[in-house]
Image (cartoon, rainbow, N blue to C red; front, side, top):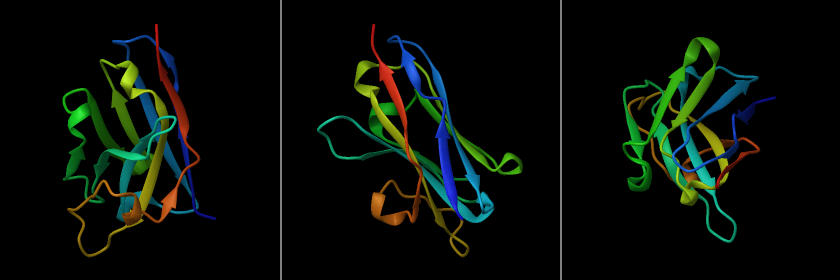
Length: 128
């Protein structure tokens, strides 16, 4: 069974850092583009970042550029989201998602409908 499991969320003060992990089980991530999304209470789910299956392309939402970094370690079957200089507006449930890309490996999109597999999410709360 294909599963994605997020971890690393928690409560952090403004200006702090967290590193989220997205671990895959039941399949290898080598040919999957991965996206990170978040959803705040009362708001729609929004794209935060994504990384292509080749690892050569990354995209970020304007609100997180320069603060968040996405990376992948295929040997560990895991994708990471390093989040620095966190702000209260970063609060929400963070989800990772995967979609298989075998022919176009240099593309990733921050669109929810492009992804086939989703994790259960991990809560991130930025508050003093």
